[in-house]
Image (cartoon, rainbow, N blue to C red):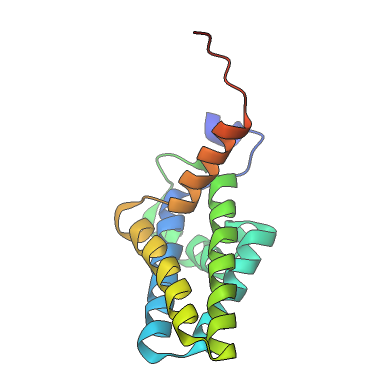
Length: 150
């Protein structure tokens, strides 16, 4: 058993995170192109599942685990699941705001919120930089007192 799998914190395959971000980016782009809030509603549900149960339990995580990952082989490394779960929460918030915008007639709000989520998903899918994960780590650094002395 590797150090990553022996860890007390749940671990995830980073390739699965990028796969899920790619699917998310496609759905969010379709929402914007078609102006269809029901596509955003589906993505909102996926974000809610990822937030509540972890990214590996989301529909995209399950599809990756059962269909894609067996074709790729084992990952070279695993990542802590907490930052991506927080990123799902951030995505959920943007998706809810977007849905509120679209469904209330404040379409500009819907487009802007969906656009922000799309940018984050696209960056994650294309270059592997999870903005929500980075925010999580920044919050952790701020909350944890420094042990360094001057």
